[in-house]
Image (cartoon, rainbow, N blue to C red):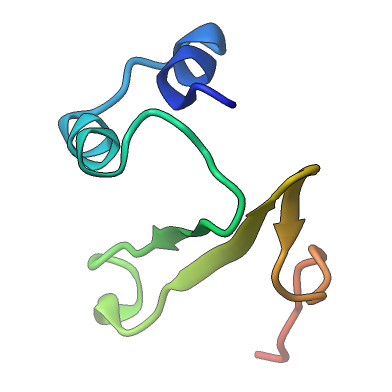
Length: 82
């Protein structure tokens, strides 16, 4: 069993109200078969009239031996021509 709150606090992060609510709903334990999607959205409405942004995402499956990425897309940044 992996305690989510214990690990979050161990790295010095204070869980947000949303995180505490999610943990209350699903429990403070990661179990095989659970799938989590993590998204980081970068957006600045003042830059390029708010018509652009970036999303970085990862989806993982919890297995008996740990976390497994659900896709094989590389971590490298893509550079698009201007």
